[in-house]
Length: 321
Image (cartoon, rainbow, N blue to C red; front, top):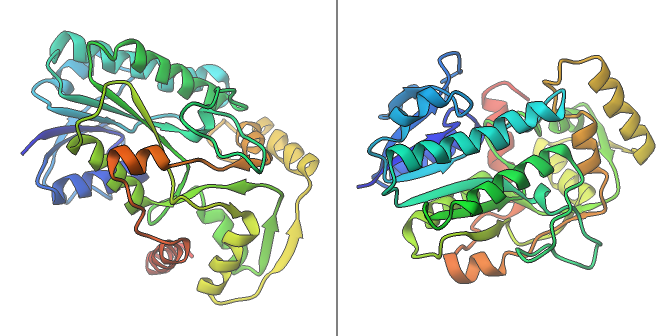
């Protein structure tokens, strides 16, 4: 039985990962802020370590005695580039420093990254782990900087980097808004193709990183292995929700303008700001998971339809939808 530290354990991905680790028989220590909402993990048999990756003084105690670290915490939105850097880059540096000083015998450090670090591709090319990274967003840029920090320490701290595509599932608030549009009878759509993955499959990939003998510094792309247009996803989702929608095509200039307006009048705590719009309006975010299949033994179990059925049913149970 291993002892695993999960940063961001109270969030969407982190809470599902925490549950799966417990199911696998591991002991979990959750690094969370004192002000964090713990609704998804408060009843789990875990140890709570109050702190934050941006508060170095809280980290030595958090990493002490830990076998594995699952570094999920990160900033997906912000008002300025510094907001992203502070969490994604500086926070990761803090955590690695604490490991070197307090837990130099750590067995593995798993960094949860994103396909956004690569930048998009054309519709005929799948993004691989060897793709030259040219991120189009601040989020992608700062996560790439964090990746490089992890790789710089890979000879001292055994590390694996997971680049996740668009993950969805119960507890996810970021895609909820889109489903609300569909329920209201409106189908916003735009050009582009994407990779997607149901949360349970994404978490399974992460667990494999603890179980396989893998060279430090290895990077894996994670998705369900398929390619979807926004209309593909919306068509299935509206069938599951049970109503027909009016298709509304959103031109890129309109989406970009919307992002700028939202950014101007918000405190940065919004998903659909200009940074996210830059990602959404790219032509293709489709990744190749051949390496993860071959080396991790990763096999996606959920189809898009199965994942959406579970997700939408959960939203309805929670009265979110």
